[in-house]
Image (cartoon, rainbow, N blue to C red; front, side, top):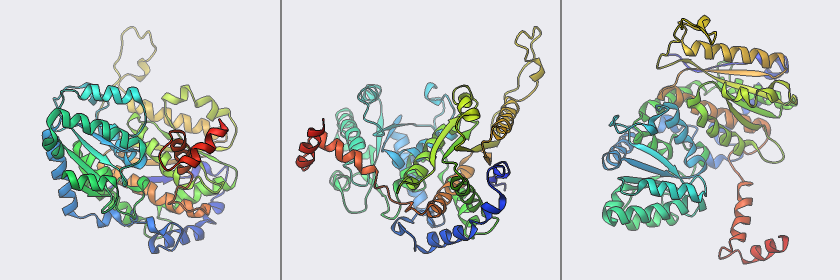
Length: 447
């Protein structure tokens, strides 16, 4: 079976192969830290061996719960924020019909998965509740504590609505909680109300949780094969055990760090397939939250080409030379569209007649990469054989493992996020949350 591939030849104008290879000893130490748990953040390394440790029993349990929700519900709302929603959203969007939300219920295996708790949008929540009036819906609520503001607000609103529409007993059958094994408000509520639960393991941080029930349950509800997703991740886990030249994670991590040490401070993840937009959003959280600390870190950005060539293309081509690009390229399309001939040829496109749309897209990708390299933008290319569950599983684990290695090469703890709490303290003080009286008084003096 094919696998994803990493090509770094188009960075060699900015850094040499020798400069990349010089980081291999550090990468070897980083892999050793990940496997032995001897580095910073070692309490959060459960994801490293997660694919190979995922049991058939867990997969069967998740699939059974997903089937029950799908049988009861036309819509299932996954409530969570950050890693508690981005991974599932990325996989579902990558595998779904682009216009699934506009189609009727013709595809019976597809329950519509919606998302809430990822923002504090009053109109968003109002419109979501309006959509769900008189509809059959269920809830997957994802929170370790049950008190994170954004998902807690959404869950309070939707739980009340669901109970009003179907009664408490039926609502309890339509709510699944993914939370801490023993502690927290959500665990207490789930126990009291009798919700089905799955556990968020203490040793897996949110941004690394897509291959746990956090991501697997919504993906399964949407009708996709989570066993294949895990199988793909397993293959990448096995392929990245050693710090040698065959390890794609080492190549990616050492290359991006060599570029960073030579003044390239921004990495732009580029895709040429609109289905990968939310994969870029997941990747941004994974790397931004893992590496951006202690005054260090490559800034992660993402663009959707060729769309963004008509907005960001000028800056990338001619702007400040502090950037490099990592291009995600999907080799084989699942569906075919051939460009027709037109007898009048007023648009001048007959030279493309008979070609696949994707052939044009691939030439747009190649032409852009060549132009950007000529414009002194180093380019890496990650080739994905196809968009399916197995290759997405590979890609997810590839980026997770690479992130752990890269964070240690940067000299930071890749598994904490101390900066995330700053906005929360200010928000709680501004809202006069009980227990924050001193902070409220202090912040009021600043306003």
